[in-house]
Length: 428
Ligand SMILES: Nc1ncnc2c1ncn2[C@@H]1O[C@H](COP(=O)(O)OP(=O)(O)OP(=O)(O)O)[C@@H](O)[C@H]1O
Ligand SMILES: O=P(O)(O)O[C@@H]1[C@H](O)[C@H](O)[C@@H](OP(=O)(O)O)[C@H](OP(=O)(O)O)[C@H]1O
Image 1 (tube, rainbow, N blue to C red):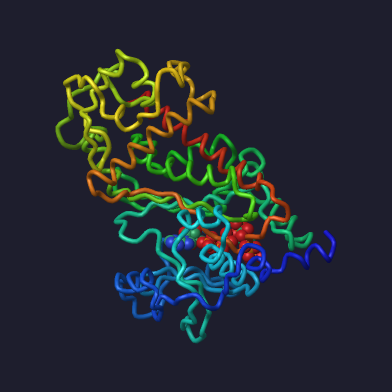
Image 2: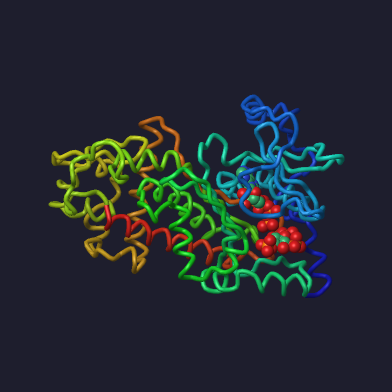
């Protein structure tokens, strides 16, 4: 890469390129008069001083050169140990607020809230940190997986050594899937115990063993929860749709955090009779009378649609089933745009596997409606999400083209989760 090209990619130019973000004018968590920040400040748990973020699953740790993530006053602190990276990440967050670009504005909903920079005491030093919303706040048993997106994890300013070092890590999953897993933690719903899997584990994964790793993370080795998969997938689809269109930024070495509360998962599985030791089982639904298959298929097939067993009600844990046969499943009202005419091929049962775009879109729409219902009608909080983090290597796109390095990774991730969803349909 020529010097002039590298020079054009100085961090400060991210602002210039995408908007007029001023990286130092951001409201602070503690001093701002910005309403959102004020509210966050009121909400905070009071750690008197920064403490280690015990739920950190990947990234730099306190090793003498670097510092790990911290928790302070209810927020997460990311210490700036590499000034250029820290500035770049701070600029990136600021640009999301300041930009006129629709895709950058849209991106804001997929990332943690950013409260600006703060200088805090860490040990005997004062360290400047990014202050971020704690994405795991309020979760009783937070299960977190860090998925680094992209085959290429080095940025345009990387030297040969860095390129080599990056290319040698997580080789197989990056090559075959376009992402890797540098770490995760899971609370097992069988015994409530926390298990952590670090980067050495992640580096050995390949396209087969990573499926097992996902199952372990999702407690899917014990039972599949459609409610969990839907919550995660809806967010992944949104990010995927964003990545399909956006031409403003290139994200290198950026991650998606998958987050859920194992406590809520357990409750959800118990209510649905999927865990043995628990409450009386709900009425057994025959395969044909179950909603546990793509909703769009159910509603497009007249006979099937009256036999879903779906009561028309959703609670915090997903759809409620009855023995009765509702003549008009509520989902039909939720998805008025879906007609027999539009998607005549949906009777094909393996649409998940063949990934036919149109079929999938319909199926996705249904799950999005279902998720919306969960929130809007029952006024419940969701307990799983997928968020984008780590923008230390975010660069402006040089030409208005798609970031295929990012898009490929998220598309493969989505396919794997859609596969789980269809497996879940068959088992339940
Ligand atoms: N907003 C957040 N809320 C909760 N946890 C977070 C948040 N941001 C980061 N984390 C935790 O910290 C870890 C590291 O975050 P991040 O990727 O930003 O750090 P990093 O040191 O830049 O990583 P890398 O070494 O991959 O570049 C994540 O895997 C996650 O466990
Ligand atoms: O997954 P691993 O093995 O921990 O690899 C690290 C990871 O790629 C980080 O993103 C990178 O930090 P940067 O984002 O700062 O490049 C770090 O570089 P470093 O060793 O130079 O800190 C790598 O060691």
